[in-house]
Image (tube, rainbow, N blue to C red; front, side, top):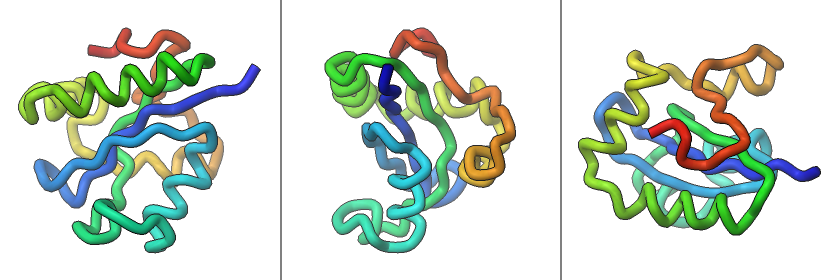
Amino acid sequence: MKDYYVYILASRKNGTLYIGVTDDLIRRIYEHKNGLAEGFSKKYDVKTLVYFESGNDIKSAIEREKQLKKWDRSWKIRLIEKSNPEWNDLYDNLVNGFPTKTFGNDNFGVLK
């Protein structure tokens, strides 16, 4: 079964946030980090992966992305800091195969 990811990028701690959805998190974050993803994240230099969730249903992933985008900024920051209080970049852990506490479970929205 295919996995889908909802993720949050930041320009810096408490900086500009970007929320997206993808079926290939490593590739998509690589694109953001290397300026290959045109648009908001490139314009505002939003490249640090600070949070993500996974699930196996694209419709649920898209709904979760829309839900998070509607949240107040303070709620998004609490969500990030609940599992990543230092706002560390989680990308290297993904690439190197290290587990990360921020990895959600198969139910979008469980980590609120």
